Amino acid sequence: MGQLTLAVAGGAILVFPMGYAQAQTAQETPADDAPADPVATEASPPALQYDVKVNAPGDLDELLEKNLELERFRGNPRMDREQLQRLVRDAPEQVKNLVATAGFYTPTVKVRVDTTGSKPVVIVDVEPGQAVTIDKVELELRGFDSTPPLAASEPYDKDALKRSWALKTGQVFRQSDWESAKRALLREVVQTRYPRAQLLDTQAVVDPDTHKVSLLVVLDSGPELRFGELRIEGLKRYPENIITNLNKIHAGDYYSETALQAYQAALQDTGYFASVEVSADMSSILSEQIEAGQASQDGAEAATGAPAAKPVYRGPAPQLPLVVRVTENKQQNVSAGIGFSTNTGNRVQLNYDNLNVWGTRFKSAITMETKKQAAHTNFYLPTTARGYSDSVGASFERSDISNEITAVSAISAKRNWGGTNLERSLTFEFLREDKTVVGLEQTRSKSLPLTYSITKRELDSLLFPTRGYVINAQVGGALLPVLTDERFVRVAAKTVWYRPLGEKGEVILRGEMGALGSKDKKGVPAVYLFRAGGDQSVRGYAYQELGVKEGDATVGGRYMATASAEYQYWFLPKWAIATFYDAGNSADTVKGALTPKSGYGLGGRYKSPVGPINVDVAYGHAVHAYRLHFSLGFTF
Image 1 (cartoon, helix red, strand yellow):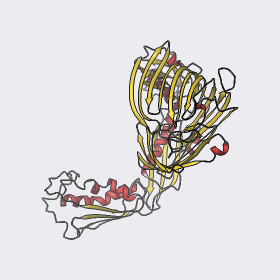
Image 2 (image 1 turned 120 degrees about the horizontal axis):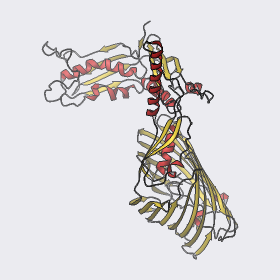
Image 3 (image 1 turned 135 degrees about the horizontal axis):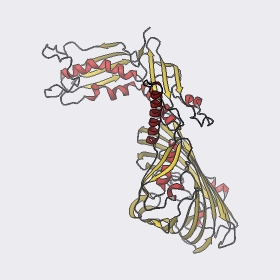
């Protein structure tokens, strides 16, 4: 019983029709050291045209069609019969090597050329044979010990690391899975307290007689490393506490690539910097270890008079300086943009930002849309050492939606805290609203509400999520009879849930609900009432078209409930088709809100650099009409 590593030769039959291939003379036969490139020899026009047909089960046909040189050089202007002969001769060995990467090491390959048609057809028939499966997996983990004097530290969970190994016994062995599993194992370690871990040995030994493979992976952790003191480079114009207050990494903490990335993202989000790099200075520990090792070697030589063995550093692991390198943004910036939304129409926007107004970051914008016009200014204070981000601002917004015209002026103060996975905020604002409903008299109201919001995220990607969920909940209201025409309490919640379905499919479920309690709805600002419909709500209906009828207008209701189910199929890495069903409504009664109006349709998805672009055509069942919807990303 023979054994070999990774690839073995399988049975191959080459069949070439008599009379098609002309015998080559000694002068025409290429030398053994001649280049293997089939286009390296001089071609005689016109070029030989031929087709390739691959007959192989499963996904093997696609694998071969993408990688065989027969396909790669088809249509080459320098192709002739001699070149085609060479490609046909080489094809069986190429097929064996390619199908081996998919787990088939003993294939039978037949290559023949059909010349009965107007041009030759190369037919490749492949019987892959029995797939090779994983018989034994041996993971040898070396090191992973706490460095003295930190031996009492929490031990690394090597058992969990072994459980994370992707290739299990009985699974078909594929080369791509093997490489991916090794990278994933090493990546999981180097992102933690052992950034200098390395694979010392990896073997995949295939037995073609038993169709079994044995895997061996030897991984050494290297020294355990911890963070040291913070060092800042490149800061000139802005105060240092902008950087230090966001630092959640303390001297003595275990090295963590996740912590570095989170810190870098937090600094980038401040808007103060054009570029941010957060890293640990590995060079500092290398020089210290080299010096310590050399000193040990010199001492041993002095004591014995003989050359010492290769030095090994075994002292306490020095701490890694935490280095923040920044390039500051210019203090003032003016920008403008144009756009279009199927919700609110054409859009023109002008922004002015100043990063140092009385020690705060000032942001302002004027936005003019077909159905909505707005202006706002905000002052953002630097994040405090306890992680609070405070801001104050003023805004004005006028909208004309479904024949309800509102003009709202607001002054607000807001506190945000928490991270990306768990974000919380508290908003206190004063609103003054003028509302005109077509066919009814104009009303004016004021309110002083306080709102608490919490958002929980568990996603595999913030930009292109495929697995996980997001939940947002809000509770608030205006409870005191101070600058408030109508006291109220309001609760709302929404969620999005992602789950893969098959190799290329994805399911997205979405839901939203809300309720408002007040003695009288009149006097409650329209922004605190509920309406449904539009790109991010119930597709097939106009923006906020679903609500309560008053005169010739649609206004917000006390209650709202919506739900959506969507399936996406990614037929190309960046392109998908989608089918969806949405339902929901808004009303002044619970029964009315739970009497849904539905919309359904088809759409396209594209992964752009700034997020998924969604284009949908939806049919609104209640209005018996089709509507086009366009959106970018998801609003959470």
